Structures are given as structure tokens and as C-alpha cells.
Image (spheres, rainbow, N blue to C red):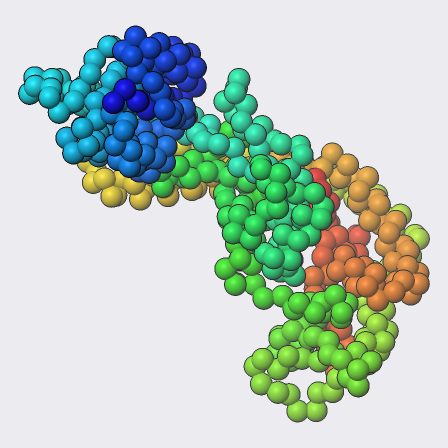
Length: 496
């Protein structure tokens, strides 16, 4: 029986460089077969790890050899190209002892069959053991290298969607093609108006594709939305690390999206049909006031009565509600002379606001230094044997989480808007036109204006009490107040 099977394999690009390329192994195998008077009936040319639980090509070779008694020979390059584990070694022994196959190694010119002596079998076992140890060493060094990268803030794996691996700097670079889609996924999901399915549909229509060029599935989208790597941190070997890559979103946005994903936020999904939904709370019990369709054409708003019904509380029609909203809008619509006075106060306050931001940043830097000191002392205590492994891991994760949170706050503090004064003036200009704008636009646009000036409105009988946003709360109090510092809490003090 002079028919033979040829199996050549590489498991890394490094082996290609070291002379173990598939083409080199294949050429050597054919030359060996010619010298030995063997005819290659079938060959396998694959790239796979010898440690994979299911080596599909290797298993195909074994099954094929078992089913073809006319084939008496199997050619490998060297022992570790055949196997680096005992499980596959036993399969080779079965082919040799039960199916009378002869195994050849073309590079070393060795053979092994059931007539081989105990010394040959011993050497064969030794060579497999050496190959196994080399594989273990390579794996261990690889794991150590990846852990070292993680400690340096370098993500030690394949870049997630929205990033790409930089092979020169070893950093994650923002993928300009997909990163905007990832950012949009978070900003849409946080509204609570999208399921994973509908969000996936929209993102697909807008051009988001996975790395294979296909649609991003629901499970993948859920995984993306739950990954801390997008706000600048990542988990490796169950430990949290601060990454050195550019975040795509803020930690605040990430945390809010987790609330949506885990059912801790329940928006009204009919909000697109009822524009004033999620704007109003009941003045008696604090429950939401939501819209309801009556007689298939009239929109009414009423308390959800989640804490019990209220006697004598009637429903409010949408057109009537739009009129009630006019009063709060008028309240923050400033006369020309008042707006000009406010601009003067804003100019002085802008400088004070910047000082507050500087002080906040310095305070955060001190907190960061303290947390780093605690972490350093923790490592010393661990090395001195003063802590158990469990205590060390708990405290290490606690301090690292503190550092990540501090960094997130520092990033926020650094985002001081250089156009603080100009943007404040624009808000004042807007305040002069608010009421005129409100009466001209449709209900959806009215709702957008109302959300701009207040976070919610408490409805009691026929009056609305707004919870004003900055700087509109200051317009209500008046620009002459000495503690008027619009930058302290206002969105005007941060980059949008």
C-alpha cells in the first residue's frame, strides 16, 4: 500500500516567518513522498491551533484514514505540526495500532508504526511532550504579555466595533466609519424609545455594519451597549482597567443606558403620539401625566393614578394644555432692557464660573493622587503578605473603580466651554423671542421648547409649576442677584 495522506499546518504568522509556511511544508512533503515511493492521495493544508478542542481538519484526516484501508501512510512535517496535546496523540496511536498506518515526518525523515520498538515509542512520547511544553510556554508568555498591556492601559485583544487596532502604537484608534454609529446607538437607546430590534433596524438603515459587512444582530448590539470600553475603561481577566484610548461616550451616558437595558427606566413609548408626554407630573401625587386618545380623535392628558385615584380631577385636553404652557414661557421671556442687564451680569459671572471649574479640577486631581497612593500602599501590603488574595482583589477593584470615576469627572470638568459668555448671550437673545416662537410652532416643537427651559411641569388644577433649567431659573429670579453664576451647574459651562 503506497498511498499516503499529507497534512500540513501552521497556527500563527510567526511560524510562517520561521520556515514553517504551508507552501514550504507542502513542498517538503511531496519531495519526501517521491523519495519514499509514495503517492499522495489526499492532502490537508490548514491554519489552526493544535490546542483547539475540535481541530476540524485533523479530525477529517483521522476519519478519512480509518475509512480507507488502502491508504497506509500519513505524512506530517514534524511532530508538533501533527499535535501538541495528548488527546490527538491517542488518535494517532489508534491509527497506528488498530489500522496499521505508518506515520512519517518529512523534515526529520523519521517513521513510526506498530512495528516500531519501545525506544521509538518513548522518543515519540518525548517529542509530543516537548511540543506540548512549548505550546504551554507560548500560551503563558502570550497571557503575560496581554496582562502587561492591560496594566499599561492598552486593550490586549481585537478592537471592538467603533475602534480599530493600530499595529504600530498598539493603541485602539477610533474608526471614523463606525464610531459615529456606536455613539448614536447609545444616545438613541438612552431615550428608552427603542428596543434592540428597532434600534438595530434604524442603525442598519443608517449604514452600520459589523466587521463582516453584515447587519449587527440584537445580541451583538446588546453586548456593544454594555461594554465599558466605550467610556474609556475595559475588563480583562475579571479586572477593571483604565484604558489609554479615546472614549466614544461619557460614563454618565453609559450608566443611563444600563438603566434602560436592565429595566430601571420605563419611558412612555407613546411619546411620539402625545408630544407633551414625559413633561408633566401630577401636582398632587407626583405621578406622570400622560396622554390618552378619546373618541379616536381627541388627545387628553391625565395623571396615571399609580398611587391611587384623585377625586374631582378632570382630564385636560391637549389644546388647552398648550395654552396653559404659555404662562411659563412668558415668565422666562425677558424684556429687551432686562436681557441687556443680564448680559452685563453674565460677563462678570463668566469669570467666576471659570474659577469654580479650576477649583473643582484641582480638587479632583488631589482625589486622584490620594487614590493612587492608596493603590500603591495596597500593592505593598500584598507583597508583604499582610492581605489575603480575596481582600486584595476587592480593594484593588474598589480603588481602580474610584480612579475611573475620578477620571470621568475630570474629563467633564475639563470640558469648559470657551464660548461660555457668547453662548450665554445667545440664551438671553433666545429668551427675548421665546413666547413669539412658542405661539407659532406646532405641538412637537412647542414640547421641544418647553424641555429646553424646564425639566418638568407640575400640573395642579389649571396651573403649571415648572422646575426650571439653568440659566432660565436665573431669569425667573432676576439678573441682579449677586450669586448668579450660570456656569456652576449650567450646560452653558460645558462643551456640547
